[in-house]
Length: 249
Image (cartoon, rainbow, N blue to C red; front, side):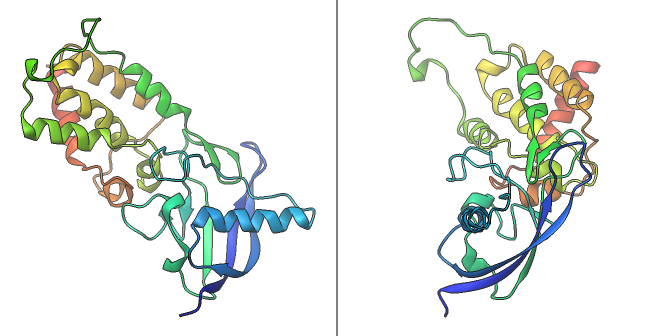
């Protein structure tokens, strides 16, 4: 098996939110199959800069699949073809020599394009902020055995808390719904005693903010779960709806 591959890239280029944008074409030669997708783009950008051309703008930070900063659509799939994998952890060995890849930003009305593949996901911050705080006593941390939490509740809370807020769920939903993201943030506290005090207020406030930010309603397609790099379950959406109905009745 060859250690390198050649690729043809169709990359969305857009100078700002107000620009119409268009695809530009790049030919990439002798890409190591051992590097990540973002490292491949780094190589492309180095070559573009040597040629005096503008590099491709994209978000990245930890490059370890835990921060949620990176993210764009590769051949119609958020984060690319590998399940439960962020684009920074996607390696070039999963692509074929001579393959053409279409790369574009996450498309959603609340995700304004900043430049090229970079989108503004501050609407997620607004949803989290709407969740407020939990009521706990200050001072030294209590002994862990003082608050009994069942194994199922603890595991469900941890599973929900794994959400990194990358936005892939929104990009994959036909309605650009943020229901999976919002429900995960609600669930990881609702399973724990510390999060129950403001639980009713939290779910209503976060859902109201989600709607006001311009996200659509859940489409029930399940694509959000399919592309989620952390495998967040859509069962969280059902739980969010159940809790929301309880606050209304």
